[in-house]
Image (cartoon, rainbow, N blue to C red):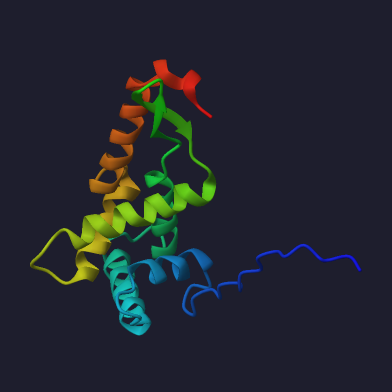
Length: 158
């Protein structure tokens, strides 16, 4: 009897109800704290309402998707031990990790600020990233700068 190779079949994530976007549903899961998905969804939709008021020519979901694209890194540095020394080796980033890093940088930029509701910081970060500026885009630029500075060690990539 031949055994079937086990494959991981993750349940497909359902798109969000308002914009029918899987990307928005993933980001809602990313900002969710303590399993409170309804709170995270409300924060996200409130941020989209703020974006809709500030940007008249683009719908909020397009602003969000463009912001995520502008935050995705192409390369990152990873530590590699060679002959007793640690080198920061630049490596390309796969698409799934690019998205994860973009989500994390935007979320952490918003959580690091205090004083206003999360939806306002989220809307501002999306608008800044949409324009190509802001904390998350700065973090991506720093990662790219580190990779550029260490490209002499690229031959150590595994």
